Length: 100
Image (cartoon, rainbow, N blue to C red; front, side, top):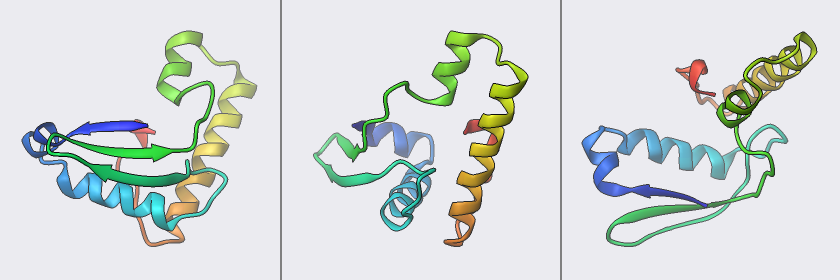
């Protein structure tokens, strides 16, 4: 579950970004994009209920491993390219690949 504080989204000017992310997760069915099962909100938070993926995200991996082998780096770069390609097919653009 991803829990997003509404006041923080407003403060950071991220409302449209979060809407686009939610819409993308609803629309795109890809092995490279996490599945969104449902979303809901209360007065303070927006909640996104997503597929559980053990192991976490790329940032967590990099923090734990410190350095990837060349083979691991090739694998993750290829996975990232395939994920971005799958969202491009639905007319979405990932503008900040360094945040993948």
